[in-house]
Length: 341
Ligand code: ASP
Image 1 (cartoon, helix red, strand yellow):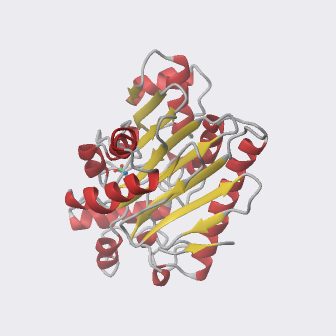
Image 2: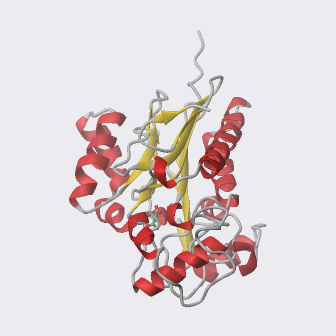
């Protein structure tokens, strides 16, 4: 009898007003290809007998390295014109966890979160203290030029002009602003940018189940354009933007961080499974479709349980997402229906 768990992984690259009409064929293909390659890389860790923790670390690191997504390279700017990134990771086997917030120089905040988990007695470290600590453990440092992307800079200028804090999901607001003239014009305009900054959305994450039956989750983000320096979102807060417990599920969120924090959205899903006996699908649906909207919470989550059930509900028009069971072909989705490459 085969006692191995049905190893599988799911990833997301943010949710928001992502309509078919808002992406060109070239842009769509770029997202599909990135999601395909990254979910395949995560699944191959699991196929080799690797842990769920390693699979989510690899997948989220690759998402951070890809400038299409708002995490690592590709992170949005604060009102001070800097990137400040948050990340968290959690091991469902023993509920060990690590997180970093407001880090500005780390190429892979998710790897830093894992260093906090594995090498410190703490769960959450922030700012220069976190950066100094993980540097001693080999974290890769980058300068401001590495994190700079023209599209994110344009977003910041628009947000400043609107005098608002823009969620990376707030494409409609950005679209309105796109017709206005910028005070300072960088060398690319939205019309000619290789990827339209108006349609880029934020936060990345991964959840996995390995052959040993263990769950893990990781989430990483640049947060929101024009956020106040020092603002920390749900991504670094366990139970809000990242959560894993073998007794329920591994979960990763993207969306309006404050609503996810105020409702502890991911722990709420786990609690409904543990205490009310709901399935992952029922609990996730209730939280994403019913509870979060009551707090004006927009976004979505990905989740996997120990039976290998995968859910990816979102209450926005779209969510960049992919999943793959070891031995199967990957599924890739952007809009409210699935697409297979
Ligand atoms: N949840 C993230 C935050 O509030 C934003 C996002 O998912 O795009 O920092």
